[in-house]
Length: 227
Image (cartoon, rainbow, N blue to C red; front, side):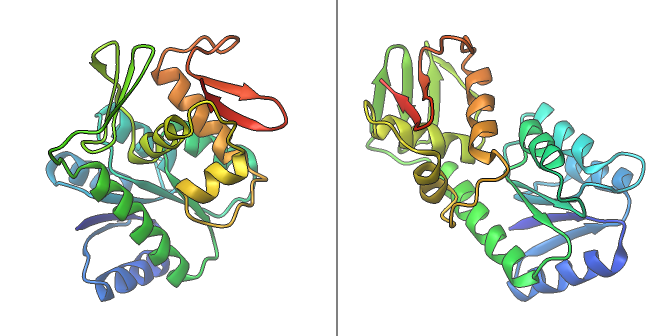
C-alpha cells in the first residue's frame, strides 16, 4: 500500500513515516505541497495524510485537487485547529477523516488501517452481484458501484458505505449515532456534524433537491432514512 504524507513540520512527517513503515506501508513523504502534487500525478496512491496548514497550496486545496481528478482513495487531514468550521471544510471537499494535533501515532495508524480496509473492500470487484434497486438508484453491494438512472455515481468508499447502510435499512430511520458507529466503526462523538456533511455530499452527487430529497430523507431530531 502506498501512503502519501504531506506536512511541513519535519518532525511530525518523519514520525508518521516511521510508524507507517513499521506497519510495512510504502511511504511517499513530502514537506512541500508542490512535491506532493507531482507525486499524486505520477504514483498510484492508496491513502493520503495531508497537513491542513502546509505552505503555498494548503491541505484543503490538495484534497480538492485529488477529488477533482476523480481519485477516490481515502484522505486523512491533520489539523492544529479544533474549529468545527475547518473540520467541516475538509469533509465537504472530500476528506474521509481528520486528526487534531497533537495526536497519538497509534491512533493515526488505527485510522489508516480502518480507511484502507474500507478502500480495499470498495475496490474488490467480485462476481455474484447483490444489487439493491430503489426508484432509479442502483447499489451493487459486491462490486461497490452506485448508479443513478444507469449512470455511475462517483462516491468515495466512505460515502458508498453510508448509502449502502441506509439502503440495507430501507424504510427504517437510522440515527446519526448508529450511522457513525456502523460506518466509521468508532464511538460516536458528533460535535462536528461529520455525518451531516457526508450526507450533504452524497445528496449533491445524487443531484438531490435539498428541500425535498428523493432518496435520503432527514427525519428531524431522529436521523436519516431511504424509503
